[in-house]
Image 1: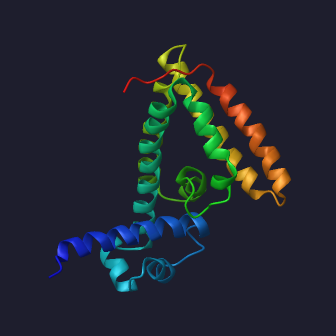
Image 2: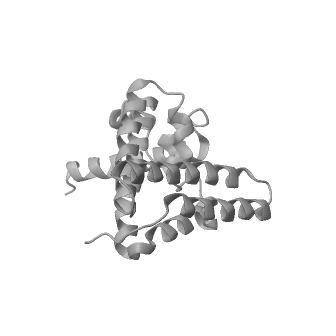
Length: 198
C-alpha cells in the first residue's frame, strides 16, 4: 500500500522542479499555471494545492534555484581548493550551461523577473543573494572583509550579466567570444583566492 505522505512530497518536488524549469526557460509571463502543471505531470488543481498560485510558484522556484547556488559554491570551493573561482567561472560560462536555460542558474534566468516583483520577493532575493556573496567572499584572499565582499559582488554581477549577453548572441562564435572575455574579467575581478578548509 502506498504511503500518501510520500506521494504528496514527491508530487510537490515535481511541481517545484517543473516551476523552476518553466520560469527559467519561458520567463514569468511566458508560461501559465496550466503549462507548469502539465510539465509536472499534474492537474492545475494539484498545482494550486501545492503552490497556491502562479506567484507562489515563482517564489518557491526562485528560492529553490538560489539554494542550488548556495549549495554549489561550497562544493566548488571544497573540490577545487584555491582554483575554485576558475573552475566555477569555467562551468558558469561554459557552453553546456550557456545553452541550458531550463536547467541553468536561477541567478541568470530569474533576476530580471525579480526586478518586476514586489518588495517581499525583493527581500527574499536579497537575503539569498547576500548569502551567496558571503560564501564567495569566504573563498577569497587578501584585503578586508568589506573588500572581499565587494569583489564577490563584482564577480556575481559580471557572471550574471555576462552569461545573459552570451546567450543573447545569434552566432556560436559571438557567444563564445563574449563568454571568454567575461571569464577573464570575472577571474580578474576577484583577485586572490584561497582554499577553504573542509
